[in-house]
Image (cartoon, rainbow, N blue to C red; front, side, top):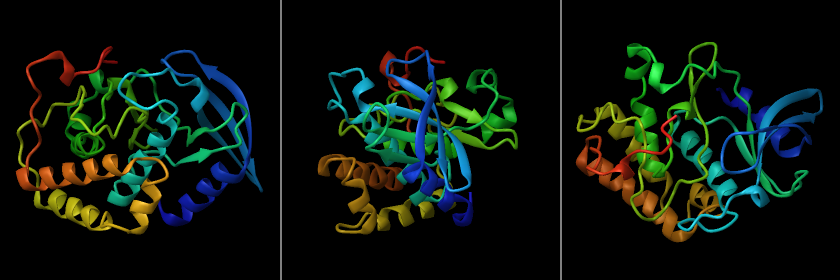
Amino acid sequence: MSTSQLEPIIDCLQNGSLAVEGQFMWGSNFTFLAEVKHNDQTLIAVYKPTQGEKPLWDFPNESLAGREVAAYLVSEALGWNLVPPTVLRTDGPAGTGSLQLFIEHEPDYHYFNFSNEDRQRLRPVALFDILVNNTDRKGSHVLVDKPGKFWLIDHGVCFHTNPKLRTVIWDFAGQTLTNEYIEELQAFQEKLELGSDLVKKFSDFLTEREIQALVNRIDHLITQARFPTPTNDYRSYPWPPV
């Protein structure tokens, strides 16, 4: 998505009038389908209010919405355009929450029935999840739109300071990273220098320790130059997997 396409979408999500149209009935936390209108633009979006978040023992209360935004910032800083445009709204119908552009997709087409060709396109998805320390990459959290582009959703339980990667996508375990990926990681690393604009943006949603843990994961990936392998226990995989 080009800058010219992205800017009006972000503007609409951040400043448009927000009305709830329905509720998604699956998932642990309250999630709503919303309509957002701003100037002459109307968007469909997904609204996740913090007061609808189920408390977790290992993540701070009312922090998941901010993590959704932080995941979007990572996607954009890498230049991978994997996460739909996402903002934090403090004036939503149910209070503060994340607001993400809704992606039209085929819900019955997911990781477990992807074609072999589509599975081979998942390397940046796997890398992204390592970087954000995703604890819940289910098969249905990778969407494919009509043109065939991947979009990643549901990043509320990411960025923990402890290693907690749980994903169904282990297709590339142990494989060497290409020079292109290494260079993109190094460019991202440079954007995370102390006091940078990106770090200032992250500080609205993550703690200093969480930002440093992200930096450490980048360092480790560059040094190892390969995809990690799952540990021999259930914690490497989410439940349920779809």
